[in-house]
Amino acid sequence: MSRLPITKTPKVYVGGAFIRSESARVFPIRDAVGHFFANIPQCTRKDLRNAVEAAAKAGPGWAKRTAYNRGQILYRLGEMLEARAAEMIEALAMGASSPRIRAAAAREVTATVDRLIYYAGWADKYEQVLGNVNPVAAPYFNFTVTEPMGVIGVIAPDAAPLLGLVSLLAPAIVSGNTVVALASESQPYAAILLGEMLATSDLPGGVVNLLTGFRKEIVPTFATHTHLRAVSGVATADERKALKLGAAESVKRTHLLKAEEKTDWFADRAQSLEAIHDTLEFKTTWHPIGA
Image (cartoon, rainbow, N blue to C red):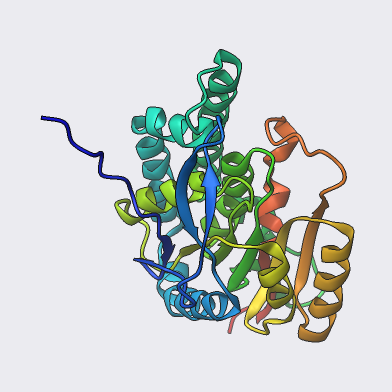
């Protein structure tokens, strides 16, 4: 007896739950041969604000986790991606039968696993490298410690949509921040599948919130939302201008790569301790000797 296949209804992962856009709008994506593949939620500014609220609620609990525990959770996420590599390769290849396309997808998934393990390894070490005991010529101790910034906005690139997304969010969450991320506009399906993996991992709900939709609708709100403490990602010239103007008004950091310049997300320089540094605040404490 013939049957119709049961196709997936993609939803975005926000606050530990799978939701549709509050507007109920969707936009279609097509597979490698041009056939309809799925309707992706077209998130709005309201969805972004809701995601920021979810991230803010999850922030204190996540920041209080031990660095070792955060590293364990990131490592576990890498394990899950490794185990479901074939499924993620299909999500990136979008039905393509070309050996070249499938090989590129496999390479991206492997690099993404390695990137998660890289930042998991830094979880209980970056404090010793970035923090410091400062020499002072006075009768007191002076030392600098790191603290997470809070909620960080991430704008994923269209090139290497999975690896680029994880390369931006992993250093933020390993240091105790929470993230609201906008997935690639042209290739959002890998982020949908990543959300399914996050839901069954040990990562608490709300630590990573993934949105899909059109950049022109959501990026301006990334710029102006006062509860976002930083924005990182890939942006066009017009987007960078809007983000920097909005960041100046709301006093947030921006770490923006130029969309006009191709970023090699597979290169060693795409992962670094500096990426963790950019997601941290530094607090200096003065303590009298003998007190």
